[in-house]
Image (cartoon, rainbow, N blue to C red):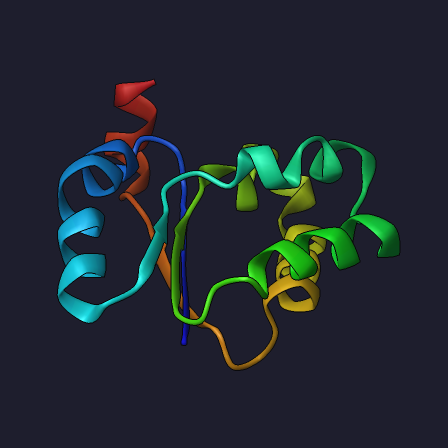
Length: 112
């Protein structure tokens, strides 16, 4: 099982990562990877090449059931969201369960 939380900025992602997801992962017997930026490196700024994709998939294949949470999977640039969605599909596959946290626009802008 692969559960991927694609947390957008200013949506409580840090609180989920620190307090909710560790407990949820323990309850569901999942390996929790709280921030996979160390795996992704600069792949989203430079593009998800086949080599990077295969390296990340190889690392993820070491775990049976995983919960991942990372704001970097969506990015802040609205113009890149479609590309990021395609990259996430290539990386995690159609079988992954995706959780996306959103915030209503006014509150988001006010918090920034």
